Length: 285
Image (cartoon, rainbow, N blue to C red; front, side, top):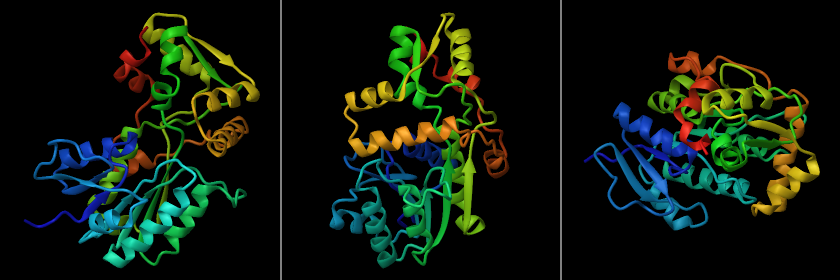
């Protein structure tokens, strides 16, 4: 049997797992790289295999015969080193095209880790496509769902800032299209957003209508947000990264709306109202 030529790293994460579903539904063979392989989800389309950026032998084995690499790295202080190692191993293995899940990159922030990692990809000598999404709608489930459910409150230091949140499922749809024909997207950097820019006032109004409860937006201080992030175990560097993102959002630098999702996939980007409806259980007390 011909081995799949696509390797998806981070295949068990928010975007990675949605991408695996998209590839499976489209019948596009791929290897799903995960730290711990599931018991029996492998089928004729998706092959789950061990993958670990910190273990060169494991990474080399996963990259054998791979032509297209979907590069999704964990949000840790080692991410730049992981990207460097994966690119070196991928080039040695014969990878031709790298599709990297990045993030917004601001030109004036030369030390932004995503900018550094994007530069490594662009300078690797392999063809590349960069996916640069805005903040995920899934954050309201994963990071804020507990307080929304138990306290009917959303705590963030955002003031009245408007943000063009994007559904991770839309990112996965874009990635699946790119992976199905990477040459058509070579050298491109796609800034992926939802169809609208919303404030937390808008978000809580939508969630209030959905849940039939009065959900309140509490505009907390930077100090309170920093303490909360540290309290859930984020390393200091990650805390400061999130706080920097909040500052950019307050400055209006996450408000831009693009049509890349619709143009690439042929379907409109998911509005937050539809996302909230699909995840209603996450917001219900």
